[in-house]
Length: 296
Image (cartoon, rainbow, N blue to C red):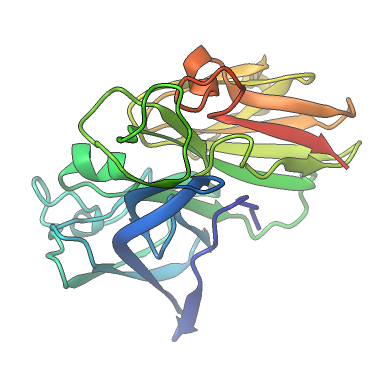
């Protein structure tokens, strides 16, 4: 299974060969720094939403319940599903889900193992920037893997209102989803140094899966190591075509799988390389979209 620091898994109930999930779109109060909360929208009490983990060949039924004050939908980003299950009601026969209602998305997982996402696809400029998205991981039945650590990181950004530039004060703050003046940048719903480190041991093979569903591209840079890009948008890259890099630019809507050997002990930053994305509300201290590769 894939580890998601600071984000829960979405449980399911198996019945007659189908995995039944329940995803609740609702207002969420999320702590992004100690004592500093945002009023956003998420799923099952979490921003980003809980991670869905399934296997190729699974049959799934995902009931999406709408506790938001407006209609919504869910799009299974990168998955090959029937048109009515794709979650874009303004174009497709897939319905919008009115407040208080629900819809059962049901389909077979026909994609191969890979990293995908899910997110709202109704009133998208508001709803995605309020936090409505999560990871959708398709696992492999083949357990003969040389990967010892497998992580997923969701990249998000928010415009938090009520704070002067450079100010960090405990409290609960509203978001302005239509503003491009982003002042807080998160990994799995938290800002550094509140982000849980990615813990590894020397000699392990490590995979980091990255997903981005928001406005900006984020060039993610690792210190002290080189990685290969083993997959893009849920599609495995053949060994001969894999790039060796230490920075990958994750555009909106993209996922990447990065793999590296933990061969250089220490505490190593892994962060977005856009300067103010490494800060919390433009403070001088390091923050924002930053985590640590921490050797144990």
